[in-house]
Image (cartoon, rainbow, N blue to C red; front, top):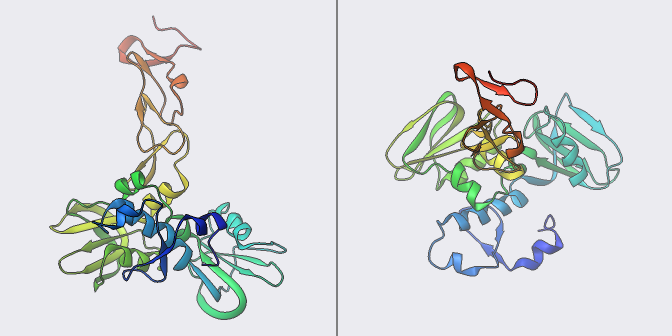
Length: 282
């Protein structure tokens, strides 16, 4: 609870759920808990506060023999985490409260998590992918009998209670890209994804989709189950878009366009698109 902001504390009481470690924060709309804890609204709440519990470890140093970078004198672990976000090679941090030293780690939990007083460590991939909007979670959570085939299965057929426990295991395992959970068998599979297929009673989710859902996709991109993808030609998207918008009839755009104002192409000879600002179709 120490990780919660004052505004988060003010939202409501703490709600204990047996399916995750720690507690989750009640929504202001308490009715979502009354008749269905499996609703996406409820699951979104679970994910939001899971970031405050299972992704942050106090008294633990994610020890590594080779740090990505070391930054001194940072007053908060949030500043440490922000520095990690700016480095593509960083997947976790260890911050020392006494002197503000911030160590950026290449692995999600370092080489060897080690007990160490005054150190707080954060698994960035876990933290940044567990605060998502309900509409985005609807895209990421593949519930229609969807399973992944894993090119490099890290582990398979492990019994767990739900997909969120399965996902928590994935977060804390290096190289894990996603999970498939079979409800009836309580079977969890995690690993590096090679393809998507079907299996009765299976549901799946990828870490990249949750990362995109949490931070929001950039201009010109859209959110898919695989993560943020570039919008194709003749479409555009603005910040945090879940889908691309088609250009007006008779207009086109280059892939990755970020607004309707970039739909400046017109159809010319041979059905090719030409840039009207620099040349004219004849």
